[in-house]
Length: 286
Image (cartoon, rainbow, N blue to C red):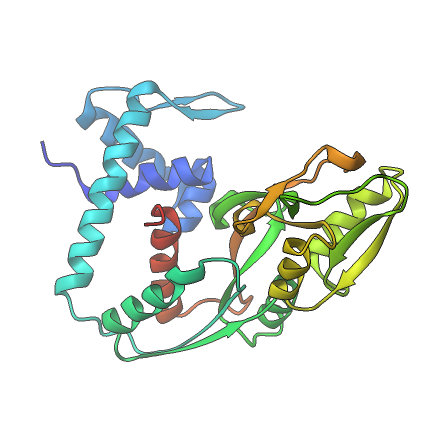
């Protein structure tokens, strides 16, 4: 049986956004059109794919299995279309990204986009989460990856989930006689804000022992055993260990990397880049 890819995209959109209204917004369709497409898909599959009540919506067991195959089909079709269909998209994309989002994979992503869309000029700004958010708000960037605490934004914008942890050198020692040494970037900094907010409610005796605007500088201080810092779990380097719950340190929140767009709306070139970025973010790192 051949399944209509438009129906598959409707199911994926509903699963990703958690509802028919947001799925309709993502696909630029009416809510009734999305409902009709899901009904057609369930008729073709011969099984209920979603369990709907007035208060909740979730995938059935068949729906979970169907969704996995639908994602694979759509990913393969999109890759095939990009490989053999020359794009007519032109213009420029102003993209902002934090240093710690994709690491060594970012150059390969940029190279692939340049190959797929040779008529698009890509301008990339690497900065802090807060600076990138301000640039998007000021219409100086078309889109950017930023970090937010979990639940702060629409799940449809989430690229990757993580959590903040306390990190120290594997041989860090503190006897408790002196305030606990911490390493932070100067304010405003999200890592500092998350750490200080948690510390303020913990009744812990601590001090800022090392300050640097550079993440590499902070990591060097941590690896030297000078201080503990707060960072996303994925930023841990060899020689660092998680010390959550030790030395009286309080728990830190979950967080997420997410895509934010300028308020004036997106262009075809920015949409194409955003879609490729989502695909790379969903793919496991090699």
